[in-house]
Figure (cartoon, rainbow, N blue to C red):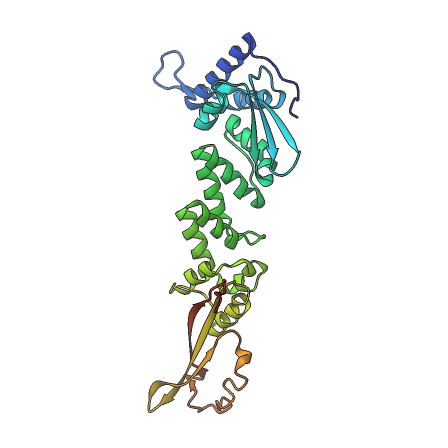
Length: 315
């Protein structure tokens, strides 16, 4: 529970600041030699010091700065009583903001404002609990305030939880592109390629952008049941992409004199319903049909994006 009253800095502020700094130093050097003996004894008070830092944050004792976090587009303001020393240890931006003022107003998107308490807790205690919907706002805060360790930690969490129940891979890919996180982008892209069958049948497939589709189609490691599954996935997504359609060409192979040749070519701009007689003349019922190679129909799918202007020019 955060205190809403503001405490002015005083002698207690210096005391708590020194105590906190000693705690951080002690946590980094947990081993001590006792009595000068060669065999040292481990003295570990890190949990006690961590508990004191948690209490320092929770109660706001001897706070010397106030952070007012306002969610963008709302009147909601969350107030955090903090300590200039601890906030500045992790963040150069906080050091600059609090160098000559004791109270600052921070404008944050709603999702970031909702997890700001977790973010501040990390600055004090070096730990937090992350849920899937909180990953992006925490990562944004880490980038904005220059907390590199938290940024790496959340990115590692995201890469390890791409297969989460909420199906975050598509959304996290687009976020990684917007922030320039190449490692996260490539991890999302690889996951989508290797799990394309599952992703194409999920609700997140509707959020796939034309750019992401183009990236997937360039890869050689797509995992699908067959090429027709990719064909139907493109039908499901292509119609929603403004300014782009996908021209699909299906090459039907046939066996002639022991060789595999292209017998028919079918082109579709949007839907297979455009050609009602698709494969109608292929005698697929006979086991010795020339359309069946090793008892299977051989198809090859070629997909070409066609871009259209969204602005009509007067004639």
